[in-house]
Image: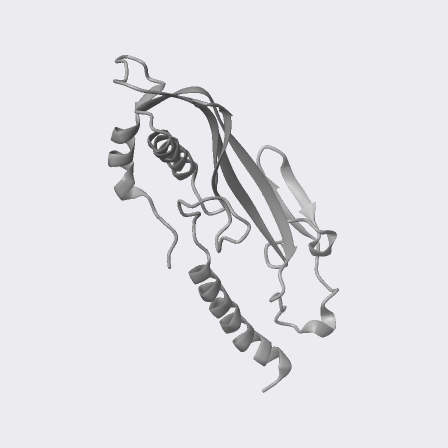
Length: 197
């Protein structure tokens, strides 16, 4: 078997296996304290600002959706409220940070059918892109349009933060920024994904 044929048959199979194994290890951030020793990046943290006031944060990894991050933040706020001996909490300030990173990496499995001896021979191509009309690109010019040679990925990550004030007694009606801590824990608790083993 020639090197080119070996590359054409075996390397794609190895790439598929690597993706499958990598997919097993990759998981969204579970509901956990943020710690450098955690198996999965991210989690919740809090800072006490006063006896009844905290800044609560939940950071997700690049596989964790915005709604999961915000839901886990709400759950942590309720759990913390109950742990401090309060009944309900109100949100004073809340924000969600959205980080987007574009990663452009060479494709390690790119093997042209005509072999590596002619690797630098590639034509210049033209494509039609609205609204700009015909444009040119050259594969070794680093243009990410050359999908066979370069892998372009967009990575998103969310972090939600809320400043909460805790209260005792019944929650007042009609305030959309106030939450009964027991109700939040009972409603969201069954949907919370905790770290595995």
